[in-house]
Length: 573
Image (cartoon, rainbow, N blue to C red; front, top):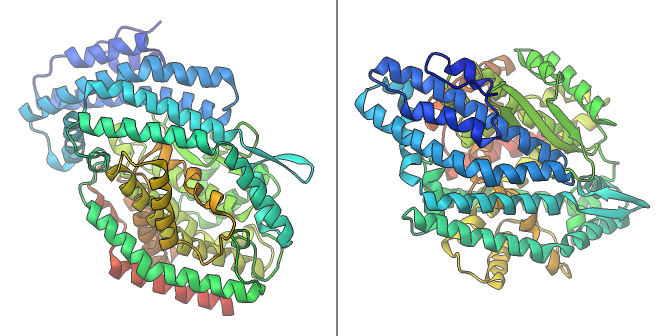
């Protein structure tokens, strides 16, 4: 049974709370709401106790989500998640609002150190301002729709070469040197996606309508402006995003398309087709850095052992307990993520490894998130154990770049190592325009919420054409029209994508620091900034890492020039 909490026993009692059952959670929320607070010291203790409560609730949700995404075809796991969305999340949202409101009022009465509590109180004020009770059931339905999308994507398989294969497994064939194999694999994946296109359209259209209602309920003209507030984007505006889109079009897309033309010449293929963009242009077999998840884990341990700086110990700790689920299998949700279980303060990394170099990048990327979580996990306030996404992604993207010189643990010869490095840097050149595509698409979607399916398709094709590779899509219109459906962020975490562009520019700055001042200096800056968590505003976090919070044209041009120079050196070394 859950122990009834009192101010003196709250911390111990919360450990016995069952965080996936509302009847168990409710007394703790009530104690915090009703507890007398008569001084700044008492408020400080109240904040710590609320943090313990929030962390326990967060971990309960995390456990159910992790289980559901690991086994989307498990009815009990799916049912537990749905039950949570129906019975716990709505009540917890309402209780959290009451606690936010009380916290906001108490902070007006008992002044706290703004250097310590300024970010927390600012963020809470926004949450209080935006909360609407009528939005709670809408959020619940949106969660269920996203669960349905994940189930559809996780169930996608293709019979290919005599075997049923998941989509991540199918992607390995896109690196095969036999063009006919690549084309057959690409078309097989495209045909499978067509089977669910209308249902995914329906899911998305329902989401757009419901999100527009959320925004209007909160007093906003559109969902975009609502989400800029909700995501606490205090330090940049929609116009800054548009400037980033323009900078990508001006400075990055020309380089990407120049690389495409070089690829076409080297491959003696004209025009390039979509199935020609992942294969090695010189006809070498795909990079094969590991055989299975165990080998991927072992080699990544060796990589961080070489780097030291505490990264080795942190990654080794992830190999203990249930912290990693790396292999691809049927019924597993697509993609990858790192989820910090806030009460136990232990990270969990989820991905779909298929033996590709991209899997190496994914694990290192998610390890960067885990390092971030671990470096700030001694922070007593759970709110500060999470940073703005724009900086959280610096932690992961920087790790991809800072580990490159150690990738020889995966590759036995210098040629493969150079290929892997080129793939990494060329991938950044491709990523930035893709970020601009998805972000501009989201702006259009939610500024035009009553659009028709045909209008959405037309808008998508315009943006896709503005930022995409130089390849022919002749005869492939049905597939090109729904490429956006593969981007899970559009469904589960709307307006979460520009962060990748902002963070990538920050990560490139840390990479240049490592080249100019040495890796130890860059890792020191990296760890110093990550240790802050989210206790400082976004520009201060970038400053702590010795990098600029800037994603305008000038910095995009400077960093893309540096990438181009490095790529040329790798090509001739």
